[in-house]
Amino acid sequence: MESMGLIDSSPLFVNIFSACLLCGACAAICPRQITISRELVAARSTFSALAGPHGYEKFLARKLLDHPASLKGLRILGRAGEKLLGKHLPRDSGLRLRLALFEEEPFFSPGQEQSPPVSTGGENLTWFPGCAARYLYPDIVHSCHSLMADFGFSLEPPDDLACCGLAAWAAGDVEGARKSGRRNIQVLEATGGDILVSCASCFTHLKKYPELFAEQGEWQQRAENIASRLKELSAFLAGKENRRNKGREQGEKKLRVFYHDPCHLRHGSPSPDQARQLLQESGGADLLDLPGGPRCCGQGGLFHVAHPNLSTHIRDQLVADVLALQAEVVTSTCSGCLMQWQQGLAAAGSRVKVMHLAQLLERLRTSE
Image (cartoon, rainbow, N blue to C red; front, side, top):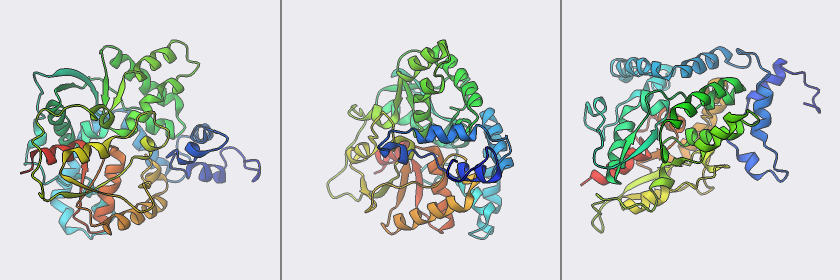
C-alpha cells in the first residue's frame, strides 16, 4: 500500500488484496512472524459487499452459506442435471465441470446416501461434519458413521450447527464470521467431550475461534473452551484400534492413492495430519507423492470464484502432475479441495476417483 500509494477500496487495491488464496504458506515461514493472512483479511474488511472481481457471485455464495441447509436443494438439482446433461456436454464446458461435482461415486451402492447408518453400541462423539458433507455429499456422512463405528464411536452431529464461518472471514466479513461462530459455540456448549471435525478447513477455522473473538469479553473464553475440545479426524483416529480391520493378504493389489494435503491443515495448524499413517496402516494403499512435495489445489474457499483463471491454472498444473503418477484415487479431508479435484479431473477427461479420507478408508476396509 505504501510503495504503490494505493487508496483504500480503490479498484487496484481491491484487485491486489483479493488475489490471495489465504493458504497460510507465507505466514508459516515468515522470519518476522507477521500474520499475513490476518493483515489481508483486515484489508478485505474495507471492501464493499460486492467489490472485486466476480463480487456478485462471491456475495451470493456467502449468503448461501448463511443458510447451509439450502444446499440440499442445490444437490438435488445438481444430481438431476448431471444425470440428464452430464454425458452430452463438451468436456471443457463450464456447466459440465460444475455438474461433475455431483457425479455419483461408483464405489458405493445406489441409494446408500439416502439412509446414513445410525451407529449403536459405541461411545457417543459430538461431530462437526461441515456444510459440504452434511448437505451436498451425504455419502461422506454415511462413510464417517460407518468408519467411526469400526473404531467404537457413535457420531452425534448437532442439528443447529451453522457454517464454520471461514468463507465470511476470508472475505473480510469478520462480523459475519463471528455470527456463525457464536451460533456454533452455543450449540457445541450443550454437548460434552471431544468434538470430531472431519473437514480440514472447518477444523482449522474452528481452532481460530479464540483469535476471531479476541477482546470480545466472555465470547473469547467460550471460544477457547470449544477450541480445546476439537479433534481433527486423522489425528483422532491415529493410534486407535480398528476393531474390524480385516487385514490384507501379502501381495494383494493395492490402490495407487494420492493424498492431497489441505493447505489450511498443512500451514499453521496445531494438529498433525495423520492421514498418511492411517492409509499405510490400512494395508491397501500405495501412497504416491509429488517430487517437490505437497502443493495447493487453487480452490481457496471463494478464491476460485473471484479469480477463476488463476485458480484453474494452479489446479490444472497440479492435476497433470498427479496424473503422471498414475494415481487411481485422489483423497483429502478438505471439502473445498475435494470439489476442486473433482472439477480438475473432469476437465482433464480423467476417470480417477476423488474420495474423502473416510470414504477411502471404508472402501479399503470392505474391499475383498
